[in-house]
Amino acid sequence: MKTSDVTVPAALHEQVAGADPRLVNPDLLPTLVADRRWGAWNFAALWMGMIHSAFGFAVIGGMIATGMSAWQALGVVFAANMIQMGLMALTGRIGSRHGIPFAVWARSAFGSYGANVPAVMRAIVAVGWFGVQSFLGSTAINVLLGTSFSAWHSWDTQYGGVPVNLWLSMVVYWSLNFLLIRHGMETIRRFESWAGPMIFVVMIPLVIWAFRHMSGLGPVFANSSTFPSTGDFLLRGFLPGVALFISASWATMVLNLPDLTRFAKSNKAQLKGLFFGLPLATLVFYGMAAIIVSGTQAATGKVLWNPADVLIAVDNPVISIVGAAAIAIATMSVNLAANIVSPAYDFTNLLPRLLTFKTAASASIVLGFVYMPWKLMENPDTLFSVLNNVGAFIGPATGILIADYYIVRRGHLDVPDLYRANSPYWAHRGYNYWTLGVLFVSTGFCVAGQFVSAIGWAYQYASVFGIILGFGLYFAILPLARRSPIAAAFLPYGDTGTENVDLAILAEIADPAVAASTHSE
Image (tube, rainbow, N blue to C red; front, side, top):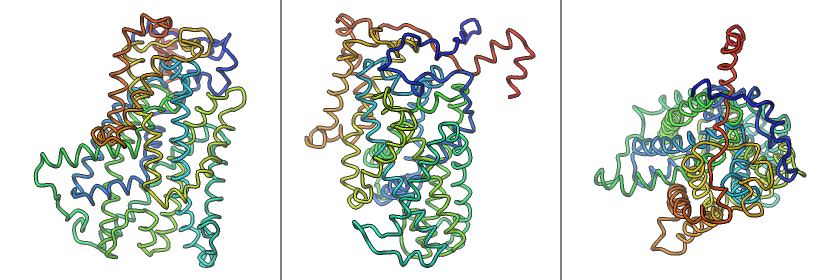
């Protein structure tokens, strides 16, 4: 970037003068450049907390159960995260450059009102996962309290199929989420900066405990692959495994990453944090997890891929208490960033005159309870079926938005126009019927795969194939769209945005002393 190309807007909040009240409220406005304070460590810590997931344990355990060796399963996890990191590098840039949340960015491709379609579907998925993850966090709280107070186990009378002690644990856990979210994004930044790395601290004594109960790396790593050849593994193990892990982990975060990167000091900062916090930290975390599970199997004869079950099997009060607390905090870390921030902005975008970020986040937390995740967890097939069907919207929407921003708009957006009615982004009465049509067709094709065996692969690989399909169909309709009455919606205009680091560049041009002060901060 040339310094001559750097333009620092007057307060962006003032730049959207003339915004339609149906499209704006203070929480949806672009983050002021000077207020973008998340550095590389904040994002690395964020991802360290987010990689902890009981579902992640189950997925890698499932891979090993299908015949993969532990090393092959870890290779699948690393490859899947590298793919996701590449996609996130593309979508995260929108937040760091333009300071806007995902739901506002989606207006450029889907229309000012049409953006609510992918945004609300993303919110529904997020709230569902919030409920499930919160339930798992509550089980860790239950282990913590049961280990600390012997009388806790006696409160086991069941209501609605759930014992009283677990009900109380859920109330405690949900209340802690309310407490954090009510203090806003700056509190979340501070919380994530220490909550994420904490899970690694507690994993170290568990790894030491595991090595004391086995020789070498134990039975999990001793099991060899059952795939007869490398080619067979790549076709029947590697490719399906990568698609499965993407679906079960961060396919949704690829879409709404701007909700977090809009607070980044620079695009470089969020990219550096992403690289160290996602693929590298995941490889370390799952490697440690596999060693711990291997040690548990050697000590008890049981293969346990649920962290709470492992803590009980360890049978050490100190490790159990500290570990349960760390799991609960880490689960809260992933939930806040991945499953509350996104629906808060998405629902606010739907009803900007009624909802704020905090009220929408609170509503999302309540809705996560209404999902009754303890019932969903009774039948995992139902859980994954519901979330995968809704999640089929995510892949195509991601492909459409990436194609629209990078190929059609060439990285340019007119941010103020995203908040105005009758701008080119408005399209037809607030809806871009071309891109919405692509979304519905591509999503319909992916969903149909679960009913039509000939295209079953489209459903199985929807998280990846959907991106390719949405990307490709978007290009297919471009020649017609550019000759339609809403052709202006497909023209690039605006600028490439501004980062916090750009302020230092301009300050250095104006006054080197000011620049030195800025860099020292």
